[in-house]
Image 1 (cartoon, rainbow over the protein chains, first blue to last red):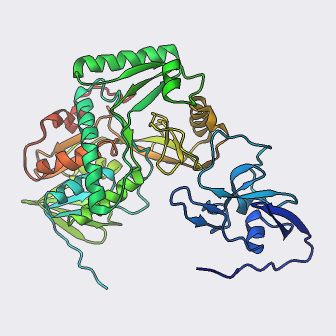
Image 2: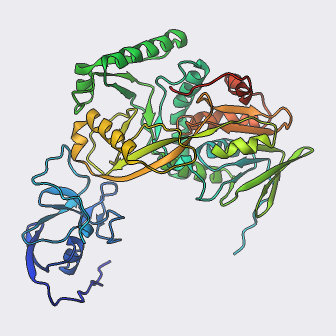
Image 3: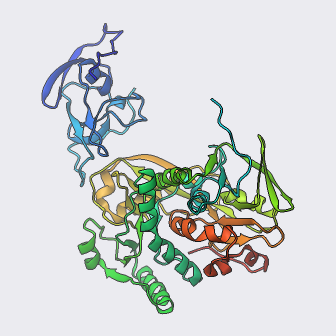
Amino acid sequence: MPTDSLFRRVDVDGSRLITVTFDDQPLQVPSGLTVAAALLLAGVRYFRTSPVSGEARAPYCMMGVCFECLVEINGVPSRQSCLIEVADGMRIRSQQGARDLPFTASEPVVMEVQP
Amino acid sequence: MTNTIPTSADVIVVGGGLVGMAVAYGLAKAGTSTLVLDQGDDAFRASRGNFGLVWVQGKGFDRLEYSRWTRLSALAWPGLAEGLLRETDVDVRLKQPGGFHMCFSDNELAERQSRLAGMQAKLGDYPFEMLDQADLNARLPGIGPKVVGASYTPMDGHVNPLKLLRALHAGSRYHGATVLGRMSVERIEFLPGEFAVVTSQRRFTAPRIVLAAGLGNRALAEQVGLHAPVAPNRGQVLVSERVQSFLDYPTINVRQTDEGTVQLGDSMEEVGFNDLTTTDVLAKIAQRGVTTFPLLAGVRLVRAWGALRVMSPDGYPIYQQSDSHPGAFVVTCHSGVTLAAAHATRMAPWIRGGERPEELAVFAGERFLTGEVFSHAH
């Protein structure tokens, strides 16, 4: 069922636009958001496929619990996009099924929860 | 809408975990009118916290009846899984490809060999292989260099234990059993030819009762002349994010579920009724998992929990009918997954009034009244 976005940015003043890519498509998004919020605001509706059923999925809880918002960020798979602040130049990809092994990180993984 | 809640049955099973539900499933399937009284979610719920192994190897080395009982259950497991799938449409994801027990020193490997060889000598049909590092590497790519070897037996397997619990509930209902939740049993009264099981809300009666209340069995058993001195033993478990399939076999401390998550565990602690987690134990579990499979080093952990095993003083099950209160049975063990098939197939005839299965004679609770000091360090 197609849905219209229920998300509206309420405090656009004070943030600047930055550029990220999602599956190689450049997107202009406001700074200061989580990756999940930024992608939803930019109209992305399909973040990953479930490794169990293969179904398309998108963020649900937006607070780090449901793991529906997983994406690959800068080469690191299965990141919880609702807990990570979006940054200029981020390369984001949809997460297709379960992540690969063995794990090879292209850069250090920051595990802390972002504000 | 009001449902009529039955207040009597042929058999009341106290406890809706894996043990109680396997027994109830067997009873209902045999045509017995069965009522299960399950506690609420404030109960300790060992069945929601376990690891999911259907494990045979090494079990019962000092009580061969337990080895045989465990093996019997593992052999009956495919039939249980097929029946549940047919009746409930729940696939419990049983796989029995054999399992590995990793050893981290030459001494450990030698002890393992000696234990399994001793069991094979006494039991006869008890296949196992000892694998050195090269053999093991060939069987399990990705094994770490600090693993010096492993034992393998084709008898072991694993299931999804949450799907099993759900399937046993659905299967019991399919065969006509009633399962009532949030029923905490306060006491059991013995009347001529009948037991009254009293909860805070109401009173249920049946000529036969089965106590399968996990850690609650200790207090309930006493009320009907049974002895079930079970105590909590905490296990902690780590669960990873879903990763692509890398491990086709269960091992004693690491397994990959059908849905891709990796479960790591195998801690044992005597900490009373504390079912929380501790960083030091979780760190050791994670360390051992990564030592076993170094490719797990970068994998994220998404859940951790503690759960309480239901442990008797010698670690073996307690199966008994009360002498003083005939018709009252206790069924308790800490291997509710492995033994589910035995419980579903072998207990019902006994509880319905038949002879006690011969192999269960050694598991009466009276064995703990002799003053002997027991150890379940196996």
